[in-house]
Image 1 (spheres, helix red, strand yellow):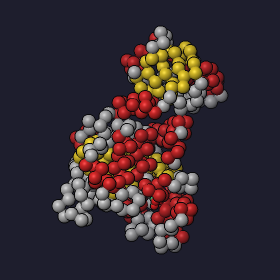
Image 2 (cartoon, protein in one colour):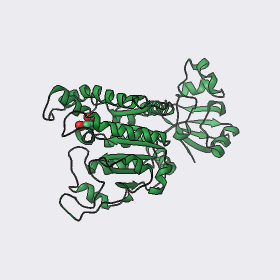
Image 3 (cartoon, helix red, strand yellow):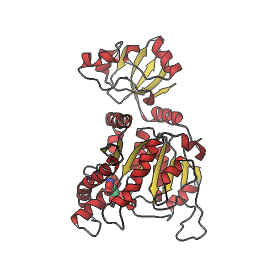
Image 4 (cartoon, rainbow, N blue to C red):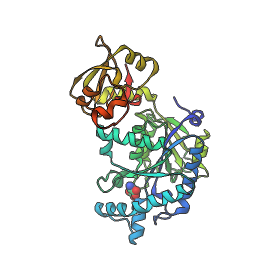
Length: 374
Ligand code: GLU
């Protein structure tokens, strides 16, 4: 179970910044408010963290550009504002990060993208590659085609789904509050900050179900929900004060900042449950003894070279069982190629994929992060 003292040893972070922290009184984006975040994220990179940024602010910037004083009620007007403002949002991040010698990448996602197996794997490999390249992914909801976050989330849920997607070690939801309180701090002077608890603590239902903060979209209700979602892949969440000095640095040092919500199970157990519970096994691959021991003893990914036989009808992103030569199941995981492709590359080294298939999607048939040993 993770505690504060373990946070300095976490590596992959998803940091979510809401519009309220980037704009003054609902006006357009303010670079002076964005710059400290860029500075802190750059410092985390130097400290060894991989950081994925989930940022809203597109609607606010779009409204400012169009000279709209009040947030439009019509969803399509909000969507238009988001499309207009997204240009300014990514430009502002690009300029600020570039000044620190860091490249950024725009990633627009929807919840549906992450529910679809193949798109999930595509998004995952792209973000993983960006991180390997040392680039900062700047993620927002694709508000033109989806409206989930416009309506209820201000990207809290999206950030949790991204944490699931890349198996983040930590999700940080920055807010304009100090964290989660046991009662509404505006109504009760004696309300206490909850420094740390488990995501399944029933106290949180009262806090989240009650009136605590209720700041329109992205209030504490969605934050607690997001933390519970992140916990499904074993990721802990810090609901942190976005207005504090060097918040990310202090969290990274293990300081008691905001509220830490810890998952009830570790990443491997969480992933196992997810693979076991949510997905049907669509096929199986029979492995030679070398591949079985590499998976079991070294925790490697599954490579085509160790596959002897393929059965079933599966597509990229579906669950496939890995069995040994006696038919005993060793592992299961999300496969990167469909059955016809695996049939063609089985027994071959990944270096031959391009010659055989005409392309190379991934080196591995099943990446070890998507594989659960049984
Ligand atoms: N994706 C939206 C944005 O970036 C969400 C925020 C909102 O609803 O205002 O602006």
